[in-house]
Length: 298
Image (tube, rainbow, N blue to C red; front, side, top):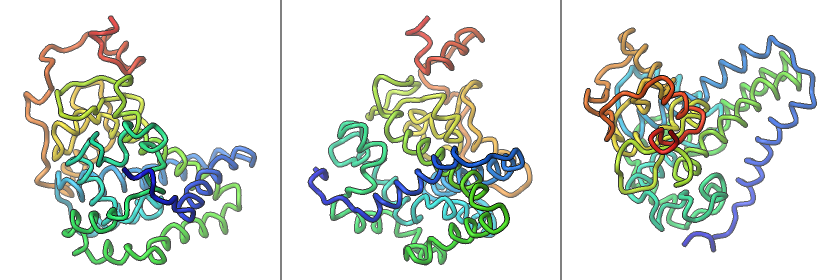
């Protein structure tokens, strides 16, 4: 369908350069004091995508004050995760057409397209469709501004410049571009790995091929429990079982306790899926190692 579209060379170059900067860091000197900075930026950028763009802005799974929304939105901009209007519009369409011919990041088009290539080879209608499905997002002033690429890139450039001036080239590479490299591929793995039949397990019978994958969930701050999410899109929690570690869920829970989040759509007590019995520690451990349905591996 869309594979005949021309490759956007500019976007392709940017994506490759951003990842190469993370790889190049390996050949520079690492200092342990980089670690807390890396962790802060990893969580700020990651939650900017998982908590703000996805669970709040796309699915409205909870509400939070405007100043906090802006902080998380800025994190997504620092990581160049995609302008909010396009991101939300595409993701809403993904839920509507998941794993059909119209879903441009489904593995049915091949792993490379599901993982990254869809970002640089989009159908001509992509932008118009995104605007239609994210009309509400365009009413937010900074989301509207960030449709302009020259403005959207400013938070990223500001952080990169600050790190370069204070920590030098090596510090900038380790503290910003290594987290970006990891976040990008963990986020893209939700589209690719978490929609492939041979990986993960299913807790719900959905009309798509979505799977839950513990390891993707770990790196993507809880987004890897994708079958759970497709079954309950508005739910603020993607990890539903006790072993499904969902950092974004715990962050929202903490914000709620601090009265910084409200109207949270939490899972119903019976929303554990088709399995009603609890797994033993050994069964859960096997699932964590293999990311497969424990009933099929034990």
